[in-house]
Image (cartoon, rainbow, N blue to C red; front, side, top):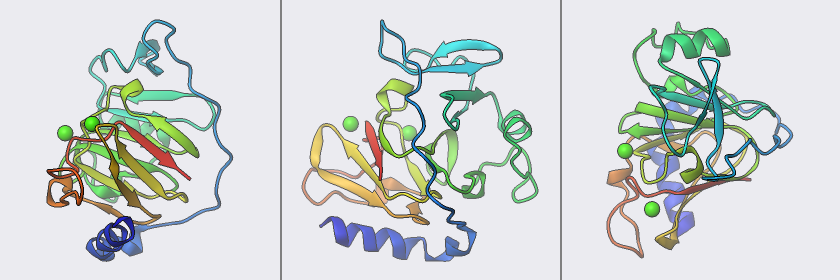
Length: 193
Ligand SMILES: [Ca+2]
Ligand SMILES: [Ca+2]
């Protein structure tokens, strides 16, 4: 079943294959700092430290840095300036799949690559609950070098896999073969490997 799903995602995303730049696998990043009280990931936002599992405090984009935990931004303009991401592709302020940079795995809160976004880059297990993004992902793009396995803890049998260069703009259209319903707003964990 998983292999069939993988093929269907790849087929759905055939049109964006040219966007993908696949680089060498980077070394796994250090574990991000977490709150001893909540277990939530601590992120830097406007010079403060926030617990993403509790409140994003106005941030809309949270990005795993290379070895230094998470950093969040209030909008695309702040994100692009700080991260050095080219704004010519879509223009500042418009959310699109081209917002997901090379060598990064992206999840969006809304369909069509819109709404809040998280970016992960290191290999290994990533808890979406620890960054306040559990049961939220509606669209996904894997622009990184690893295969992403997305997991709903309420349905361990239906894992969605997205290889490098694949994704989907609307997870509600992907029906789960074992558990009922779609993959929309379901995932608590992502494994990049
Ligand atoms: Ca959502
Ligand atoms: Ca879930």
